[in-house]
Amino acid sequence: MPRPITATIHLPALASNLAAARRAAPASRVWAVIKADAYGHGIERAYPALRAADGFALLEPAEAARLRALGWNKPILLLEGFFDAADVDRLGELGLSTTVHDEAQLRLLEDASRARRLAPRSLDVCLKLNTGMNRLGFDPAGYGAAWRRLQAIEAVRSVTHMTHFSDADGDKSIAAQMAVFHAATHGLPGAACVANSAGTLWHAGSRMDWVRAGIMLYGASPAGRWEDVAAQGLQPAMTLSSRILAVRDVPAGEAVGYGSHYVAPARRRIGVVACGYADGYPRTASSHAGHFAPVWVDGVESRTVGRVSMDMLAVDLSDCPAAGVGTPVELWGRHVPIDRVAAAAGTLGYELMCAVAPRVPVMVEALPAPAEENAGMALAG
Ligand SMILES: *Cc1c(COP(=O)(O)O)cnc(C)c1O
Image (cartoon, rainbow, N blue to C red; front, side):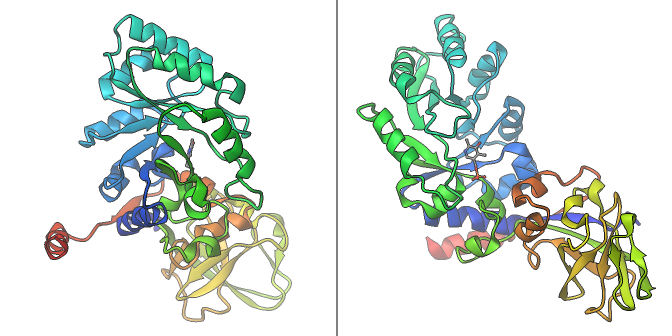
């Protein structure tokens, strides 16, 4: 029998979260952001659940090629654009849309178009404006000139105005960034694409022609607080689960795990679970005294005790008297939101879902059978 840890990808949840993105931004087209191998869920696994998107956004031509191999023939956007001249040729081969965020990319496109390495009027570009994030994008002063240069490139078919928010998920406002965006794009025709998940969920003014939905598709909060998104009907798209490998009664005063920072205040039943940081569970969620993460054991919520080690972690079984060797444990998923485990580790669900280790076997909860889908469509249509 294999080691009992498993990640389960819930395709019905992914499909439902995409529908939630559409409900949140009903007038916008939706880029489903699937960079980082669909935030750790797997592009090939997630594809059937997300194919109702208007386009897929990702980082690498190699990821785009995987999507094309699956049969996707609609838009694919490279969120950071291309990295060298060879990548420009991939744009044409794979029919990709691209972000353009700097002078070097502009020049590569001009060269490729002049050399007819890109067909005339074949390329859709998202021109990125830096509105205050100060990561990628043209500054407002140079934006108009960049836009005009793109218009003059024969290979370019369309230019969409794009920016990215630094604070759509926080307490600060996006108003300053939106003001910069409107000022810099004023009078320049073209569609607009500015919202990430946080904009899509929480900032009406940012839901423009396109939105770029990432984390919300995977059922976690851009801000790291599950309560913020639970009401919008998002569903966790990944469950990390395992089983109890060993149970021991630890007498009062004895410690558990490396560093001995958890000391049983009274006699405690402790379960040892087959999951550690080498599986992608964050060590920092339970790494020092007084620090622990929620876990779901035998129908109740419990918590980790002591340090997370490479292959194991320990949980308190005081409130789960029937739990024993073999009892299933949910590390995160439908009962324990990934946001809460991430919060215990001082990070966000993004980092945890992207970091599930290759050694963890993955299962897929399938979409409803096509027969039912057809029946549903027949009823609806
Ligand atoms: C990753 C990314 C997104 C998606 O962000 P979420 O917060 O996951 O919705 C949107 N736009 C760009 C440019 C990105 O890199």
